[in-house]
Image (tube, rainbow, N blue to C red; front, side, top):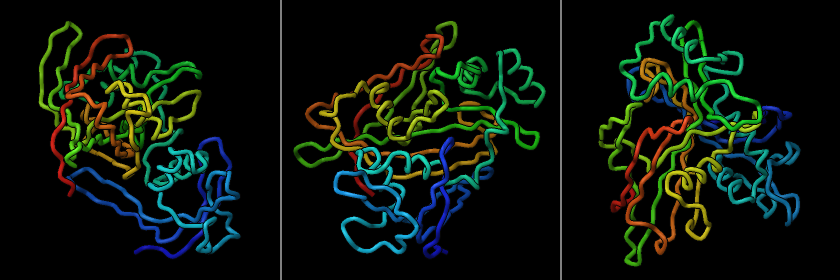
Length: 320
C-alpha cells in the first residue's frame, strides 16, 4: 500500500544526508523467474525553486505540504532524473535520490567488496568457490579487466566482485537506452541489435542473434571515486555505440524507469556468479534527418582486443 507523506533521509557517497518530503511511496518486488527478484519504486518528492534563475531542488521539510504554486510541486524520480539531465534540477540532489532509492534492498556494499590484484588471484578465488567458467559468455580475463584495482584517478567500470555470506556476487551499475526516430509520415522506428559477432583471443569468430530488448546498454563508470550519473552513461552510450554526440542529432532524452535486480542464478555474462544490477532506463528520440540506416558497434577489451562487433537496425515500433 502507498504511504502518505513522510520525511526520509537521502544520502549519496561523500555527501551529508538530505531530509526530503515524499508521498505515495510504494516499493514493489516481483519474481519473474526462479532465483530472480526485481525491485521497483513509486512515489513523488516535494521540490521547489528558490528563484526563477536557480535549478529546482528538494523542498526543505518546513515547506510541508508543498503549495500548488509555480515555485513548489511534486515530481517522481523519473521526472527528476530527466530534469537533472536537462539542467533544471540540482544534480547533487538527484545523486542522493539515486543512491538511496533501493539502498535497503541491496545485498552488496563497500564493506563486502573484494580487492583483486591479479588474474591468478581471481582464478584461485573462483576455484575456491567452485564457480565453473565453462558456461560463461565472457572470459576470466574479461572479468578481471572489469574488476581489477586501478589508480584512484583512473576511470573504471562500475562493476565489483563481493563476498556476501560466503557467496560471490557481482554488483554492476547499468544504463539501458531505447532509441527511436519518427519520420515525416509519423511512423516511429526503434533501433534494435540484430546480431553480434564474437571474437576470441585467437581471432576466431561466431555470430549470434541478439536477445537484447533495449536498443543498447552501457555499464556505468567510476571516476575519481565518484559514480557516473545515469544520464551521462546514456549520452556516453550514444557516442560510443552509435557515434552520436552532437545535440543536433538528439531531440530529447527522458528517464523511463529504474530498478534493482537480484539474480541468484547468475550474471548474464558470468553465469554461476550471483548478480546485483542497479539499472536505469532512458528513451532517446533522434532527429530523423540525421539517422543512419544501420549502425555497427565494435566493442574492445581494455587491452585493445576486438571482443565483439554488433549490428543495429531500425524496425517499425507500435507503442503498447
